[in-house]
Length: 135
Image: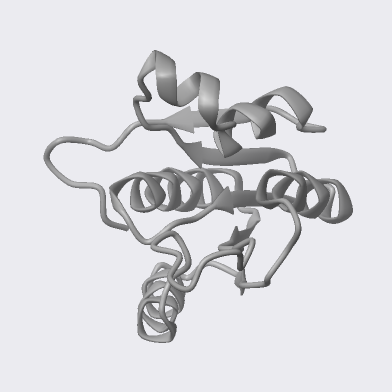
């Protein structure tokens, strides 16, 4: 089985990656890290640069985890994470959650919220640890 992590290069994505790696180790499962973008803006701060993805791969390999990292331009990021979980037969999806204001909730959808609602398996929603959120 596989654990899917919705990754972004920020404290929320690193928290999801840390928890996903811990669960993969505990369960002796593979890890599928998804870092997709809609590609609708010139710069997407949630789409990791190649050097950060290389660092993620090295950290996961150091932990002895069988891991795959995917980066694609997709129509819908939440749908892509759910599809990856379905196709891989995931046992768990891990997402980082951030606080949003009521206005932010009304104006923009949340990838994490949509993953939680549409996932074919359990979802672990995590917040960054104040002390350390690195794998």
